[in-house]
Image (cartoon, rainbow, N blue to C red; front, top):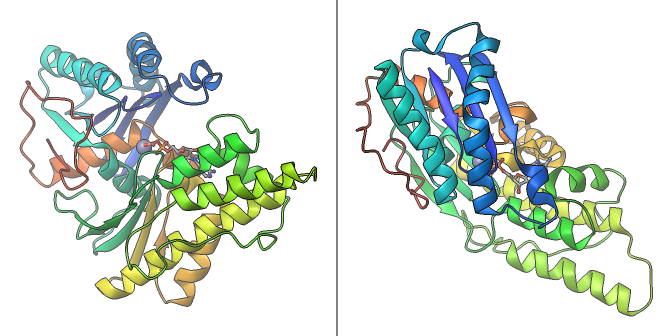
Length: 337
Ligand code: KG4
Ligand code: ZN
């Protein structure tokens, strides 16, 4: 299965056989966006256009296959940046038509869940998935990873967790995207230095990160106004602790409520070192099993799309039509378009 991902700023082409990863080629346009402090959609689209064919060739070379060897093609149909998605969808259609292979338009968010199979192998039980990326933060009930049936238990009411990371990182003068540098800086700070708010702690499955981001901004401003040094490592560590605390507490609670044994974590923020450590600790204490892919598979890539496509094919899903649309606002519950 060949998977194509272009929903944001990474052009990803992955190749898998079942749950075995054969190739994971990525070209990123992140450097072109850094000076704007965020992804510029039109710049991303043009970069995808340039990177698509070379990245696909690299993936085939890495896997030791030709495009004719693949059985089917999966592509991210949404959600994401409309223009960026269009490039991947158009490329996938062209390859499917030229190679006479079935095409599967899949959900980017479900791909973040399905990629776990490449790292941790098949999972024959239902799980609760904590999906935390730059654009989404949700708790999902997933009866079968890679299946078409997904229920959203709750989501963020405002910013996504990754968005909060990026905004707070910017405030602290860190480069874009802010998650990785903030993660590193936080390791030098005291997570208990500042008691930042844990929003909506009474609401079982909903998240809110906008207030936390504002609280960090106010705290930093107050320090600056008083002419005092801002202890950036402590701010980073305390912010990170607040995020990891609410995410893990709610994921564990959801798993208990749903009566499942597994908590699966996916999306770019799942690469966060503190989130991973705290989730492992709390899952163990609650008698739950945690599944999370290695950091390199948490952020956007083509292998995750291929992983989901392979599961859909294995369970007899109907291929997408060749007039498959790209849907920038595709709901998390629509796994296959
Ligand atoms: O899933 P992803 O690659 O793209 C989207 O689908 O949005 O997630 C990107 C987000 C960004 O906000 C980035 O700052 C965040 O994931 N991220 C992290 C880390 N690595 C990436 N956040 C916290 N800690 C990290 N180590
Ligand atoms: Zn993503």
